[in-house]
Image (cartoon, rainbow, N blue to C red; front, side):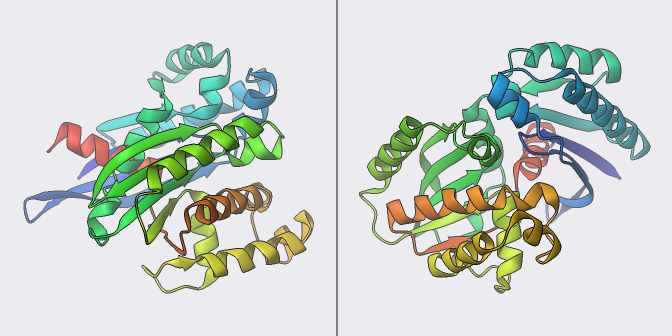
Length: 293
């Protein structure tokens, strides 16, 4: 059995996805075998101090060592480890990369916003959608939001903005970045009527599961808005105990909702599709393209 692994070091959580690769009808496919998520919250350090603390660095190294052991046990033959917004902004990001290499022998790449967007798009979600429609692809993370406009199945424009859930919780999102995002999105979508949304990221996936919508059905702006109103009517404690949200999801889900709703309102999007994929899936797809296709 051929196995690949993806490590996604985000601003909120660190993920390991181990996938089984098989060939069917001449095409390589993958099946998720194991997914582990560790809520390290590197963004809290990075966005406030531009430095990741010794405590969080040590936790990250321990996490990576555990991932390395699991990858060995699963006989993973190829892997790609990527760090995004938090590690991009931390002055000691490259020092941590060297420490991880020394302690675990894992190679970690701190990627730029455009490469992050390209990895997410390696999922080729547009292939499953109506190619006569125009889509705004929105991926919301802890430190940044990646946007792309897809016309007839092809990306026309994409951009990464320093607006994310952890950044907003820490009050590190800037008014001018919001303005910049608004101008960019209006400029690149104004020519298209009946725009639909595609949303990826842990929060929109959770919102979709909470909505009880049928699989593959879109989430309406109205439904998302009423869910947001419901969530904000509960305290953080109630969101954890009454709604059953994980503590590291219960706070970030609110700013995530705000980002999706704001973008949908700016562009007149009435519906957003929520495929169950993210950065880690994109890494697996990219590995398949690079190593096998």
